[in-house]
Amino acid sequence: MNETFSSLCTVSNYLSLCASSKLLLLVPGFGLNIFILLSLVSSLLGRRSKIKKNVAMFILGSTSCNLVNLSLWPLTIHWQHHGRWLLGAHMCDVMVGAKHLTSSASFQYISFITFSIYLTVVCGWGPLVNSRVFLALQIIFPLLPVGLMELIEWIQGSSVDHLDPVNLTCFSFINDEVMRVLLMVKTALCLPLSLYFYAHILHTIVLSAKRTQRSQRSNVHLAKVFSLISLITFTAHVPGAVFALMKHTSVCQEMVRDFLLDLPLLSSPVILLCMNKELRNQCLLLLRRNPNNDSVNTKSISNTDEQHKKLNMVETDKIQR
Image (cartoon, rainbow, N blue to C red):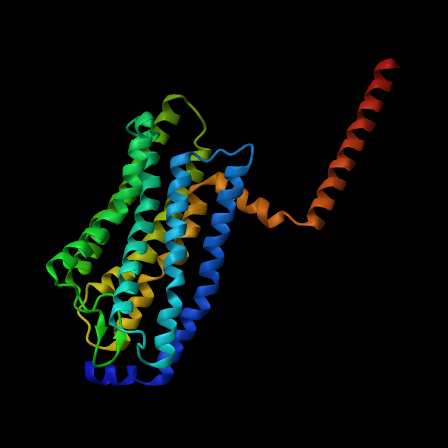
């Protein structure tokens, strides 16, 4: 089965199909992440910015990592289009290391937003969350696992060669057991832990609303948002992680695995929009910001002002009568 499957994968039409699919996803991937970055910058420069500094740093870190990762896609598209890797083993290792580092850091930065909300709402540790030292540790931590692994392999002189000298392919997980372990930790520990954070935060808010006899309407909306975030997170991460933990021998299966592992680059901007209302509102403002809309808005404002004046005149006339 593997032999016939691998023989199908050597067809140039299949390689060009993989390259074209990557190319089609490259444009929306860049567009979404750049739009999130512009919305964040415009919100921070605005006078009424309500985004907390630690959340802003996590959004900036996640989006920047996604953009760096997406900028490496043309290398993959290049070798898939030509049917073989032409840039040497060193460049292959650099690309793979950068992709691992940025994808891991982007996921953890988004997880830290949920973790910060958990510490503030459930544990009541708001001052710790807002401290600069804790923020600095959270920013540095996502870079440690992959960075330490690369450093240990470099010191021991046992770095993994990601370039297949026979097929001239450059993949992330060929002969790399350490990366499989890190991915297993993320799938088995980090994803369920983030789901637990969402559930515990929602449970705490619902209980406080019952004690103070507040309306549960906003909590129902919050439950829908958390459910949507959890669904997007698991849909984007689990298929690629499960596929990556399997043993593969064909180039075709490696390409499918590489493609699935890149899906979070498209889902993380959507998750950030669901998480932060201020960022979402700023995105809507940027979408509506054009000369036509501005003229329409000014006309509508002037019309409403005139209507208010007319109503006030009528009311004063009635009072005088």
